[in-house]
Image 1 (tube, rainbow, N blue to C red):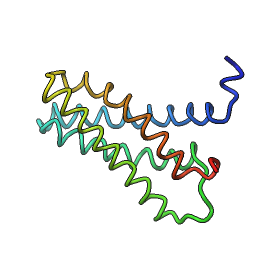
Image 2: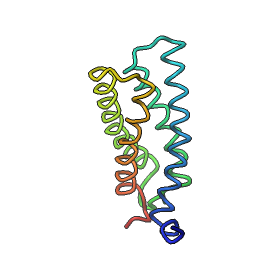
Image 3: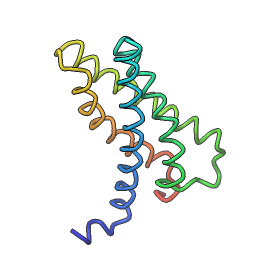
Length: 135
């Protein structure tokens, strides 16, 4: 087990997961607030809370998880991050629509399920396109 945790890819994923949990906390609290206090539609609330968590996640990910590419400007880096996040948002909303809208699963139950699947997409796509250590 120790050998597995010593691998650079595993260490990077553990950091990614920790940043992801912090981002999920931001997203989940905001989602609950928008749903229960603001009585917002679940898809709109999901979209807003997801977008807020992406900005939070970008800051932490680029500081603690991925190595910046020297030849990439911050503007280009954030644009790529945002485009990859937009695909993640589309997947998130699709899973939420299927789970809540079609299968009648509760919103707060479906959110962690959606997050599980979107997390893998996020890690692999960001690692591929943003990480200088992944050459």
